[in-house]
Length: 208
Image 1 (cartoon, one colour):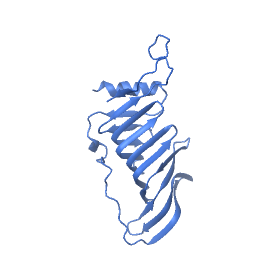
Image 2 (tube, rainbow, N blue to C red):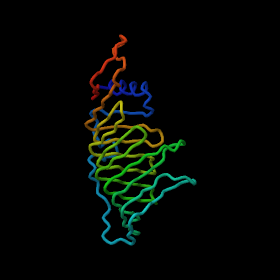
Image 3 (cartoon, one colour):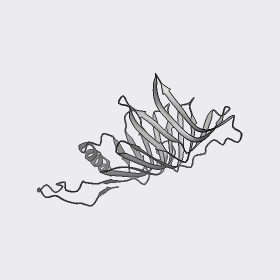
Image 4 (cartoon, rainbow, N blue to C red):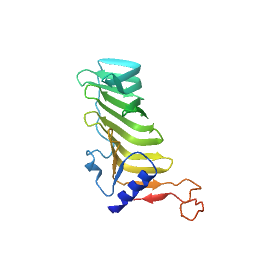
């Protein structure tokens, strides 16, 4: 079992995926921050100090935007220091090259003081060639980590990964997946896979 993640990592490196991936086969999802089912409790704002429609929240550091969230509506609680948003669309920027990540969801919660962001229900997004789907996304600014939870799917044209929980280190771009992990390597059609000079149209290779 220990050899399979290594084999998959080698495939990814050779194919130039440009992102590290650790598949935690058989590992409990609770090992990744104890957040597995995407059913975490969220702040309930019964009486909002401020309500607004069509807003944009911007989080920055050292003169650069870290992330921004546009939302159809928002409720702000000064005592709880959170903004509850509907139909949020988040754009964030990673690394010195400022690569753009776009994610949207049905609901969200923003804590700008703590640099934390939570999105849930029908989460989907994109990062370069990658697309993602999940029930919930948590960004923890103090850890520089993103947690995707609940039927997580990460894919690009040549491979896909499914898991219960995925943890992403924003700085190193390393991903760790746990809970019902499956990974598929999808060769391009017409690529010589059998080494004899003949093009081979193979079915996706599954790693579990």
